[in-house]
Length: 124
Image (cartoon, one colour):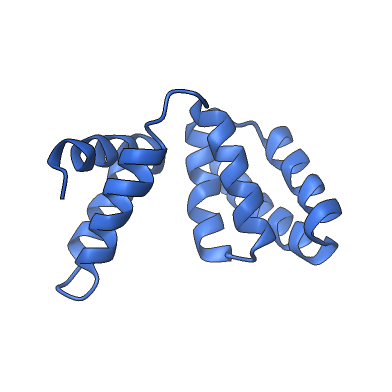
């Protein structure tokens, strides 16, 4: 493990997803799940999310579109919250899922919209 990349990833992960969420993930991790969380923190967050060429807001919108298109609703819920933390507006989230509906299918766009609507109502 590259400690600097991991620490960068942990910092970014906390900023985007919230420290409470990451603390809960860390507390729930055991010998079986800890390696995947380390991998995610080091490479997803420390290597990719730290790249300087795409801002976090854009990166969040890209992530929402991909997760919605792949019907990954559990991760989508987490990243909708992260997108809001990164300054993505409810209108931008709505537009993202309209785009998903056209390019990935109406069921994917509709499910993502419904998930986002519930989260937005809780947060805003």
